[in-house]
Image (cartoon, rainbow, N blue to C red; front, side, top):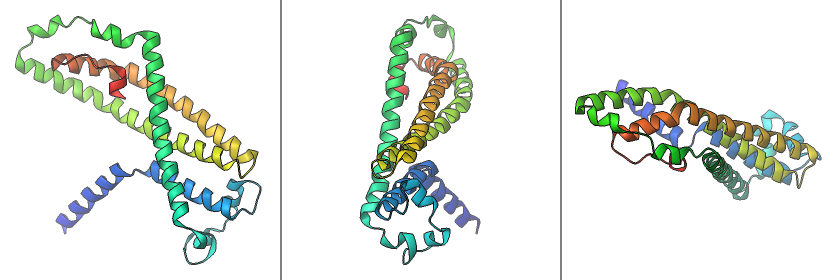
Length: 218
């Protein structure tokens, strides 16, 4: 019994990493909004979804989901890909602007590394373990913020597009989500530079590697 539980846990973890919850939410939002536009009962596509009885979402044979097509699945998948891609593009652009403004990568390349020469192999290994342990917490925070970025960008983009068939409410919700995404991206940059980048530089120095460029760490 334990073996099956362990296999199930490993499989669930693998699926979660491949298609995490926030991407499933983006997919569902794109899927449902595309259906709402086809079956619009209110001026706003979002209002149309809100007005759908929950019982209609329990079956594909009757109710709101009965007219779902592969086209709706396509829009859900396309929305997910667009949200992920746009989020990555925005964060890379933001890091590039910050790097150019601060010269962080140039300064990192000129940091004195002579202290490492006095360390033995054992001391280097211990230092690497210490640095790695210190990076785990900010790395987890960055992953959480990145998930939030993707979710907000994805939902914001979907609602902005839905506004062409809906009304200002859809556009307002979309703009609000994108504004939240901008704030979330700024927070990611702050956490990255304050809590992660220095440790990444130290790790690279201890391993004898070239100082990492900011763009390569995002």
